[in-house]
Every structure is written in structure tokens, then in C-alpha cells.
Length: 270
Image (tube, rainbow, N blue to C red; front, side, top):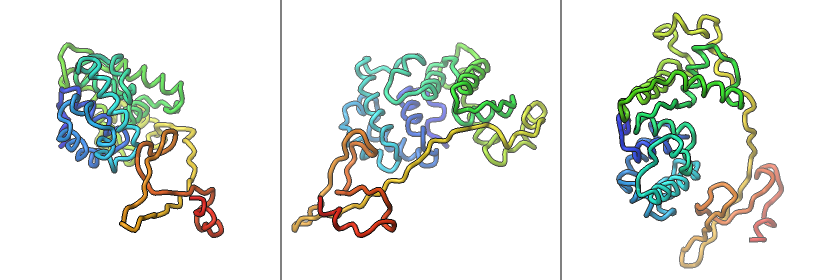
């Protein structure tokens, strides 16, 4: 079971959403519990040192999330220790984008604002048979408007609100029934009205174009130790990967180890 399911505390909802931004539930759950044990309230998190937060985050990757988590906690404290009470206010917090703001606003406050994540894109693109690329500005605008039209309004507060229940339901439906591969179309309750199923385009949706290009980087690390056994490490600066973390002395090369000549001359510059 997911420990944040049914939660109405905006701090706990926010914490779970940030951890799960680029992390699977199975891995993120243990980190969620560790963070709550170390920082039971947003005030506790705000008072912590950034190095402590980064250390607790170790293993989750995308460390900018941890730095933004810490910064946002400090922002909340400048607001009197209370999270902003609506979608627009939540967007002003570091690391909180449209999806996270919508999730917190609907689950904690019952605001009628739609979440839009990968599961929601998939369900909507298939049900309405929309082949507009989801990662293009036009597609994003189209799907956001459609999702917002579908989210209900209601006066109930918290996770049990109409908006909160709808948002959780459509995300769960995408994660369990309308899955990326081998969707359960034969047992889907919307099989009779799903446009993609009727048109035979389920496997082609959603459409995503222009993936980000990746580049390889090659680091040669040097294990430098004193006669007393002390190990030389350094803190990585701003403007590059792993900002604020510590690693060994290194030389970055344009080619992989097997593709270039001996590297002794490179190490001599350390």
C-alpha cells in the first residue's frame, strides 16, 4: 500500500509528489518514510542543512529535486509555515510544476484542477483517439484543456473531493488498465466507447516526437590517499551534474578509455 494514499496533509502530499516525479513507487516509498522520520514537518525540513537533505536523498538521482525540496520548505516557512492554499500559489514553490501543483491542490484542498501526467496523457489520447504529439506545445495545450474540462467540481475538501477522486482514478486507470504495453482492452469498462480501440490505433498512442538527444561523458577517477589513509574528495560546483555532491578527483576526456591512448599525461595535470 502507498502510505500517502488518502493523505490530506499538504506537506506529506507534496513530499510524495516530489519523490515520485522521476521515481517508481516501489523505490520511492522507502524514501518517503525516511524523510518523514527525519523531518516530520516542513519546519524540520527547512531547518536542515542542504548537505543532510542530499545525503538522505542519495540513491534517488536527479538531485535538483532534493535541492528544490529544501528550498521550497524554506519558502513555506517565509509564508508562516503554511503551504499555499491553491494551485497558483503552489506553482510559486521551487520544484513544483503544473502536475505537482494540481495534485496537491486537488488532494489537499479539493480544488478543481486536473493533473496531467503520462498516465493521463495515455488514457485521453486513446479514449478520444488523439494523435497530436503530447510533447509539443500544441499537444500540451490541447490535452491540458481537455483534462480540465473533464475534472469535476465539488465542495468536499481533501483527498475525498470530487476533483481529488477523479485525478487519482484516471492516474490509477492508466497505471493498471490502460498501460503503455499490453493494455487490458478486453476487460476495459470503456471498451465500447474508446475511439482508439474502435479505430485500431491503441498501440500507436500517445504520440511523442523529438526525444532529447543524449551525449556520453567519460570520467577517469583518481583515488588519492594520504599516508594516514585519508581520501581526497571534492564538492562539485554549480552549472554541472551532481551539483553539491562529493566525488573523487577526475579527468574528463572526449573519448572512452578503450578509444584513446594511455592517459598518464592527463593525470599529471592533477
